[in-house]
Image 1 (cartoon, rainbow, N blue to C red):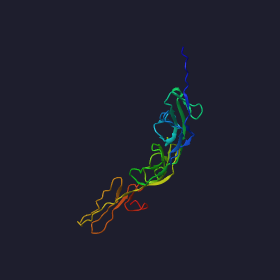
Image 2 (spheres, rainbow, N blue to C red):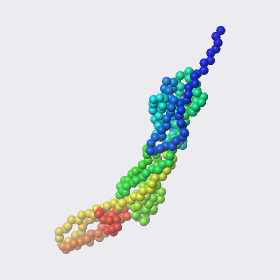
Image 3 (cartoon, helix red, strand yellow):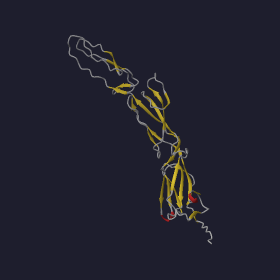
Image 4 (tube, rainbow, N blue to C red):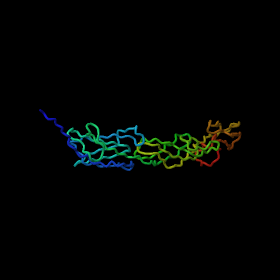
Length: 275
């Protein structure tokens, strides 16, 4: 009769990997080294990654794996996340040794996993903003934050319009439209690589729009009363004095800006009168 045979798979030493938690570094990747990897009995290293704060959000990138000589593997994390690194023995005649790091499971206990946290870091975005002129498209805020192109920002505008009849703004999320002096800072909510954070505060102006004074052609004496003939520019300025005269002489026409808080005469300083 035949005696039953029970052949136990040969134990294989687990690769050594330091899966101590790290913190995302915007200045460069977090690099770790695995030793003891053997391509003859182990499949390629795979990984999955989820968001540090919201484990229901997964990503398809963030880890670079480079196989070197002598069983050494360089594992480079370029983004924050909870990484689960998996190595499977490709030969069923082997099993992972009882001692060593990682967790054994999967198909016939031939899968070894290491879990590694690359934690988010505090965000300190840089901010710059140029002045613009009343009536123009607002300047676009220039936000600098290394390593997170998809971060979502909230804008906080405050300041004082020139027109005292207009209300000051405080912590407004949209850009002001009235000429005046203002400030802006931005905040960031949690993103893949960053916890919430606040930028520097910048000051800026919405300058008054320049209005070019119209040209008046000289007249030739005709025996009747003559004026400049100007009729004003609706919403920009009005003709408030244009008496003219009959005789040969110099005469004055007075134009008044309809809104001197948002407009000014061309080539004049901000402090000139509205006429």
